[in-house]
Image 1: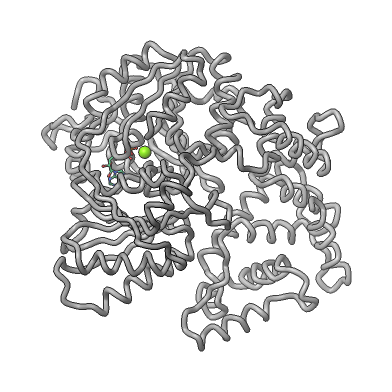
Image 2 (image 1 turned 180 degrees about the vertical axis):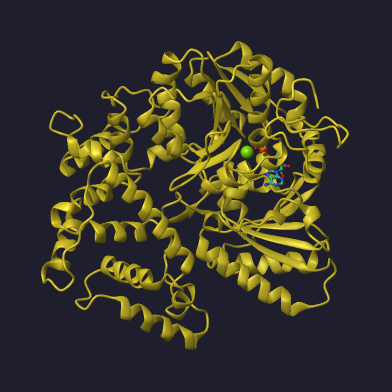
Length: 600
Ligand code: ADP
Ligand code: MG
């Protein structure tokens, strides 16, 4: 092994017999040797020395590099290697790398664990809401930006970290903006030894971040190695049913275009699953194609557990054929999929992860999407909208999420960190004063802030839960209504994707409706009680077959159960007791309703 040993060999070719992994003392596996070659070919490799030198001489460093260059997977390993080369103390030095999306945090940590030849959750781990897969030994931790903000509430100077890497800054997610704000306003000043690396796939956002740090940050640009041409094909006229059009186009590409994988952007989990089924069915019926077998794969964050590794790894796909990936916008820049030659872009996306509203994307994002087609060779992007729509109707950039969000949670978080003057807090894009005022009023209405804007005891407790304030309020007051068990179950069910299965066959649909009706409450009042009934019925036996028989998704219920355990743990820590009114008592539902009404 190399003399530094950092990062586990670092792609250095060594004889298999002699190599021992410095992190766990085990000999390197076959996979390790197989994938370390790939690492050495990534564009970011050529900039490694520059990067480490700049990091050495600057507290804040911005890295701009196109998607697929190796930012997310390599930069944390470069940092790790240099930390452990320069400082051989036993003191653990942790590197945190944030991602706006849960699936990205999870997928990238898996890849990096494989590259370092360690198990996920040990030296390399991840942390997302309701799931912490990191531990004592973790030195590289991938986490959602929201998860790091939550850590900062308890540990305002991020004392456990030596280097914080804010990845995908160009996405300008709410969590990223809050994180950059607290870094600039407090953490960096109080922690001169802490380094901040901000990574962006676009130069414009990179430069904006540099200006935000008053030019005191260094900027490193990694040029695109080979920009392969991408032919843009616009629709002749606007389409109404974008999902149908996307499916038709995917089938057409498969029939008419030479080999190469296809990426279809679709806006929601249910739509993705539906599109996959349709494409599968249609190409399956075609027979005799020219590129070999087709594999249709869905990519969205409800697939956390079953993430399809073959999406990334061509060598696992035997025999070769065509892969059609149907994905949320996560495939724009967060997950670099190699081998995509055709992109189908309907021009829509959801406003944010929680939102149900589908709206047009910006020109900048349309460019990111088409760019995916040119990463490995010349490609084609089919835009399912007209050139006129692109030119005249699409906004140039997407507004940062902070300008479109309800800020109650952000305000509560900052108050908890002891930041009081929110109007003068230096956000990169400050939200309108009215939006802040609205959030302050909302929190005051909930009793989380007093009339002077100070955090109340109730507000303190609410801030401990990873929930929106209207929800955490219900939970905190629920013991007073003698129904905290029930409110906990309801909120857990609300925190996971819709649990009701919708079968495709007409005959089954009626049966599904009937099953759902059996769970609903007699007075027809409310989905919440229906969810409670489903959860309670599930807990009788926790049987997946029972779930399927009753048209509810066992994965959703299992996830809800996990959420419930975690929230219950926070309640125990806050001495909030778990209690229920007797089901036969006439007040059983009345109490639940009262608690649910707290917080509006
Ligand atoms: P960037 O962050 O600059 O977009 P990444 O570091 O995510 O780039 O990816 C670098 C390379 O590593 C890409 O070629 C990508 O295909 C590969 N890669 C990333 N994640 C995985 C994975 N889970 N499995 C296999 N290869 C991966
Ligand atoms: Mg990345």
